[in-house]
Amino acid sequence: MDFTQLLNEFAEARENGFITTKELKDQGKKVIGVYCGFAPWEIITASGAMAAWLCGMSAETIPYAEKHLPANLCPLIKSSYGFAVADKCPYFYFSDMLIGETTCDGKKKMYEFLSDFKPMHIMHLPQNPNAPNSFKYYRSEMVKLKEVIEKQLDVEITDEDIRDRIKIRNRERKALRSFYEIGKLSPPPIRGFDLRRVIQATLFISDKEKEIERIEKLTRDIMEDYEKNGSQVPLSAKRILVTGSPLGDATENIIKIIEENGGVVVCFEMCSSIKDKEEQVREDGDPFDALTERYLKSGCACMSPNNHRMNMISDYIDEYKIDGVIDITLQSCHTYNMEGDRVKHTVNEKGKPYLHLETDYSQETIGQLTTRISAFIEML
Ligand code: SF4
Ligand code: SF4
Image 1 (cartoon, rainbow, N blue to C red):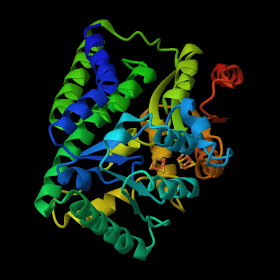
Image 2: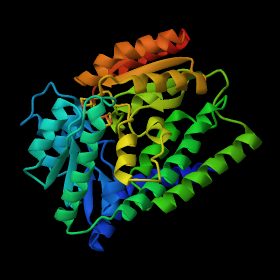
Image 3: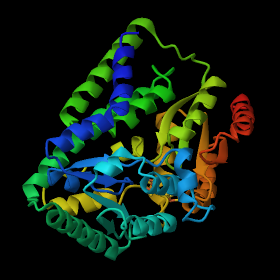
Image 4: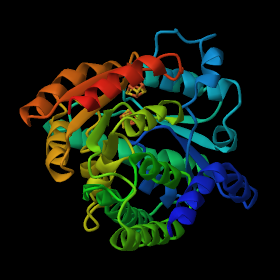
């Protein structure tokens, strides 16, 4: 296939991300480490710093964390903390400061502890995305973040700088959205495993102009190949929407299991996936107002009520012609686990079957997951 090389280049960009970060650091670039979709990339990069996604998706570092943190925490929190205490995350090592957000309880306490290692700023989030005071409160947190970064890195961030970053991020969202939307085709041109691999890699590409150009080329090449040669995905593959807690390297095996058992993942409704690319940030007017409006629509389960997520799932079921929904939540992730019942209701109301899976980063449950997933797909 013509586009395979480009697909592999994205995987390589991901693998080489830390080398690029080191080179930028050696050239004097500042690095700000982030953990969550609520970190406003536009403000961070308007400072001239690079926003680096910190590691937290591997079982390997959990034992280090469990020396300090309770074992019954979500693996994402333990893994993130383990990477930091064991000094195993190069992005953490290169970070000049860290940004956390008060999303779930475990994470916010973990951020508190991380301030022993690096300068840490914690953004306080409102809990209700629609309450009248939430906008004002969150906007003030955006302004505070700008001021903290200015002080910490000794830089000035102007509104114009932020507007420029809003524009480039919007272009990135648009390009990624078009890439994602190839999943609407029947059969889809590529498997969800490859689609996700590309999206994950983009998090580690700091040169956004280059990334946008490559994503647009990849989408074009895939479409040309599809029109000429069709797809390797059989038309009979059951179209799956995957939702839930953020998926990491350790949990992406689940995508493989789905696709090796008669399914194809055509849509991911989770952090850094399609829902993150849906809404653009307004480019006119006050940039803090625009960012606040946009980030309040993240659809994360830490918000209550989180109707926006239910509406998105409902729309995606139609747009991506979904046969069944698999909701993957991490163990001890109370927000996503609790919301599972609402998701089930939303999915069933659309007349579609729903499967809830709870997992951690260990490989011990793979056998059991395979049995449940293959049975689910078989009955679709
Ligand atoms: S799911 Fe929510 S809390 Fe977790 S990383 Fe995404 S936005 Fe942050
Ligand atoms: S997966 Fe759930 S519990 Fe873990 S950090 Fe994210 S929201 Fe918190």
